[in-house]
Length: 111
Image (cartoon, rainbow, N blue to C red; front, top):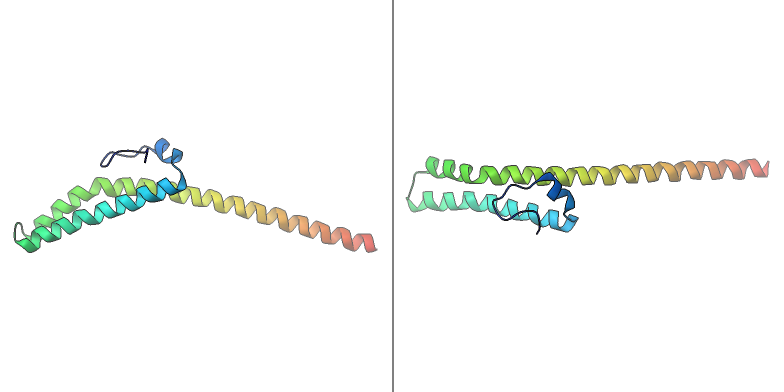
């Protein structure tokens, strides 16, 4: 992926340049890494290395920047989906108007 190396913040311009597939892969990777932070904390707490509250706090601290990046990636995904939905809505309206116009023309031509 061209957006950023692991752990680096993702710039909005870089997100806009990514293909849909790359954007989905980046989001899945961030999702996986966030859960890995919490899994590591859980394993440390179960092993008795640290107490559960400390492990959770450390996991949250490690996951926070990743969650912010995932939110930025998700915002780009949503923006793309909204643009796509708007284009489909416009196409639907155009087809409906053209269909109504054609029916009206056929009815008037029969006259």
